[in-house]
Amino acid sequence: MKLHVTTLLVTTAVSLSLMAPFSAHAEEAKAMLNASTLDDVRKVAPALEKYAQGPLADLWRRPGLGARDRSIVTLAALIARNQTVDMPQQLGLALDNGVRPREISEIITHLAFYCGWSNGMAAAAVAKDVFAQRNIGPDQLPAASPAPLPLNQAAEADRAGRVSQQFGAAFPGMVQYTTDVLFLDLWLRPDLAPRDRSLVTVSALVASGQVAQLSGHLNRAMDNGLTQVEAAEAITHLAFYAGWPNAFSALPVAKDVFEKRPK
Image (cartoon, rainbow, N blue to C red):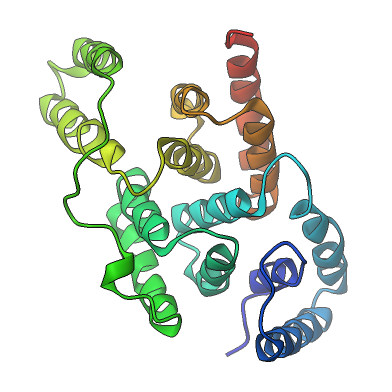
């Protein structure tokens, strides 16, 4: 089967010198794959090939967001949009860029809640094969019920109080699950750093066009250590992987957050 056109963008990015060196055999195989997919897309959309080897390749070399973070952002976008065709290549690139298997496992688990269970299950099915090819076993995956990270009691009490006041009477089940499952469990899982978990969430919200909650989660991301430059680069990166309209819809929200943050 021909690879999806978007896979060209992935394999072009893989060809950049932004990751640890591969073996000679891996480099040769990668070059052959690139030549094959570039030839395929050239027969259909020569301009797409030009953009893939130009702006998209340049995107992965931009300062302000490292290759590891760009892989996290890209994976979050693919999972959020249930674009499983490109996941094998991007999962391999993420591993090569330093995203650990346990972190990929946590990204998939996290996004099952933020993008829907089916999206998480579909991503897990793809990752299973990639992990098998890389000899990644259970010893490299997070525990189902690890000891949680410390909880910021004051911040959680404030969040829970505001949500309960707004929606508790009408939607008690939703409020309870949000507290017990998301913020007292999922967000406290230790195998994905809070800063990276926030980056995943923000990326998925932008990729899905769900900007209504972006302000709260972007503020949380910056509280967790994501810088303004990194946040801006993440949205810029998502313009290519989730489309210009989704990225542009996020700009006024992010700009408002940046301007209101303490200097």
